[in-house]
Length: 332
Image (cartoon, rainbow, N blue to C red; front, side, top):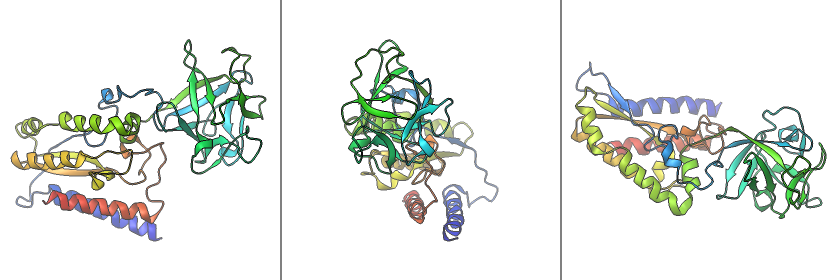
């Protein structure tokens, strides 16, 4: 009940922010004619695909949805019961339990998150070779590499933290104890046919994809060049009177937002306020990405399509704080 009431109050807070930023109080007949500046301060890959071009191994970004079909059993890897148990290779068709979401550690190392939000790992409590999905937080045992066949990139091997490759010994027994040295034929149980069924290209993916060394330079160059002052001048000269600027919750922590997000977007927003004032434009600030991701889409800053916003009071409190920050910033 508390969460429901707080969410209702938050909705009114968001509305108040929009009104205070863009309502023309001096003219009761004022009407907004705005252009959306999407893809600038919150990344959306479909708006600027080239922003991802420099990422090494960019096929494997956070949230990429993968399915693996064993060449020996002819069936898909699956998290039994959706998670909390073993990994099997006995599903004839693939759906939620057979889909694994990537968490990218670096260009070669990954975690695999299952339907129930546990992570695949080597069963360290057993014989050290069993594969389970029981951990809620990934560690060394939940770290894997994906090795692709150079002749057919859909054929892969998955290397576990113990140095061995996963193999489907039977439909019910998947272990990490293969040397992976039998070639890429249909007789090797360590070979899987990989299918990508989903992909995210948002702020989390681009910043974590480039990594902490390269992401700051890439993003600051993007913010500096994607929208510039002459765009605001052009807007004001062509029958529009406002701009809508989507932002992410991490902007309130600038210049040191939590990783993998990088600082610098707040300066770009401050520039937008100055340009808007200069050319007589209103600014609509759109909190496009709330803490925990409000919808699991890439524009909400989601890592792996999970939607956690509103499930706890903490994410709501954080959101209200971000809205307060943005409202105060707009008045400076």
